[in-house]
Amino acid sequence: MKKLIEASTISKRDFSRIKKFLPSFDPTLPTKGRVIPVSQPDFRGNEKKYILECLASSWISSRGDFVRRFEEAFAKEVSQTKYALTTSSGTTALHLALASLGIGRGDEVILPTFTMIATANTVTYLGAKPVLVDASFPSWNMDVTKIKEKISSKTKAIIAVHIYGSPVEMEKVWLLAKKYNLWIVEDAAEAHGAEYRGKRVGGLGDVAAFSFYANKVITTGEGGMVTTNNSRIAKRIEILRNHAFDAQRHFWHKFLGYGYKMTSLQAAVGVAQTERFEEMVKKRRRNAELYTKHLSSVKGLILPKEQPGTKNIFWMYSVLVDKDFALACDELRFYLAKRGVETRSFFIPIHLQPIYFNQFVSQKFPAAEELSQKGMYLPQGSKLTVKEIEFICQQIKKASKK
Image 1 (cartoon, rainbow, N blue to C red):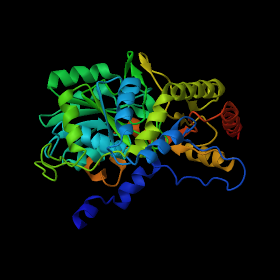
Image 2 (spheres, helix red, strand yellow; image 1 turned 90 degrees about the horizontal axis):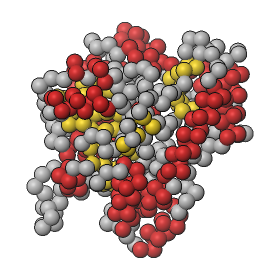
Image 3 (cartoon, one colour; image 1 turned 90 degrees about the vertical axis):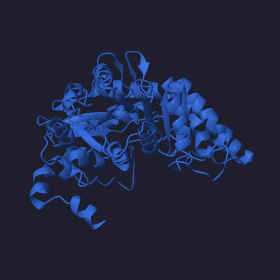
Image 4 (spheres, rainbow, N blue to C red; image 1 turned 60 degrees about the vertical axis):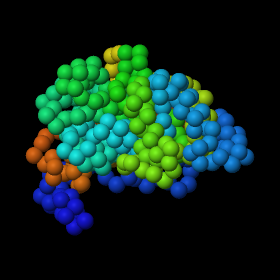
């Protein structure tokens, strides 16, 4: 443990250099009056009804019927894949996806530095090495033109992270994977229903991982899903998520497995959420259109754009606060918080994280650092109202004139 802590230490000189790329601590929201949260789960369907059905059945563990129903509905309505398998979180879904491909010690996995920490951590869990690629403009996704230079004889997979609901430009990823015999793993945690060239994310690679955390389009509080069109991968995940129990002999384990199952209670919520999935995506896209309409004339704001050939679900409405805006990004967040508007900063890139810093200290990722320094996202979700969006935009316009 001592060695791990020492290896994770950032020197005072290095921290001084990277501090400008790090956001401030989150601003405090008012304790009285109106507050618009950055995200709210939408439980206006059959969630309560199905939970009560689940309780009445007594099948509240992972063996309940709602797990099967959720998996089948998700595969059909969301990922449009042959297989969907529930897990306990988005992180465990990604961990299982990588494990099912045999990723292990000595292997390298290419992924973006601009992503949530779980993407890199799941690679590290397996003893493999994350290899980072910078972000790109205007998509903010991984710069696919820089993947090739990161491929080595140890590379086994590429993780395509669909940042903030915007699909990665997958054609170059497909070509590289085919040429170098690499697996493609999609991190679709934020991209339920997003599309690339008319095809849903979750089926664009060999295997994909989704999250059902409370701020996602579909939520079960916590939870995840692995999707694939490959029957062998699906079978491996089914075994791995349940401690690799032997099919014939209980409590007999021939290889390492994990306790990553979803409960039937969570799945009951997931079934109800999936029934309203298209409606909730439609509302997020409507919200994005309204934000863009009201903010497109504000000097110094760089707004998200839907990339050619893609359908962005705008999981969050993300903006960059450029130097021409009256306030810096952190200052705008504090300004909005005082007026009851919650926001979030962008991800801090993997290469700036204390636990990974020393691995990547000699490498440069300027685009990701710019995103981290300038980026924030505004309230979003299917419960957000037109009046709330108008209020938020009014406050931003006022701030732009300070």
